[in-house]
Amino acid sequence: MIVIQQPTRRRPKAVLPTGPIGGLADPRFSYTESVATDIRKTFRRVRAEQKKGARL
Image 1: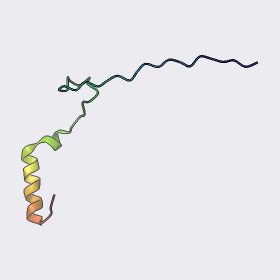
Image 2 (image 1 turned 90 degrees about the vertical axis):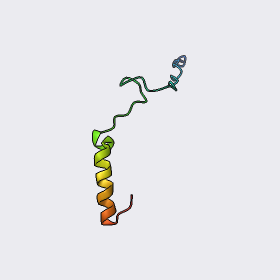
Image 3 (image 1 turned 90 degrees about the horizontal axis):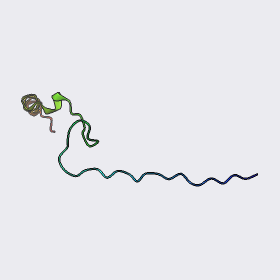
Image 4 (image 1 turned 135 degrees about the horizontal axis):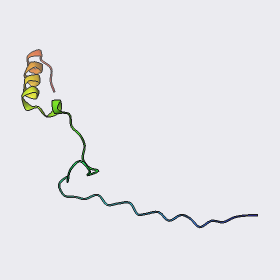
């Protein structure tokens, strides 16, 4: 006996919104650590690397 089933219907993929990110529930939101966004620490690190002769 052969049982033939109808293919399951799938929902079309959701289209991502193109405007500004609406908040934490928006799938385009990505968390950035505060260390990566602290401007003072960034410039301090860049100056220290420049003194050592390292390049970014």
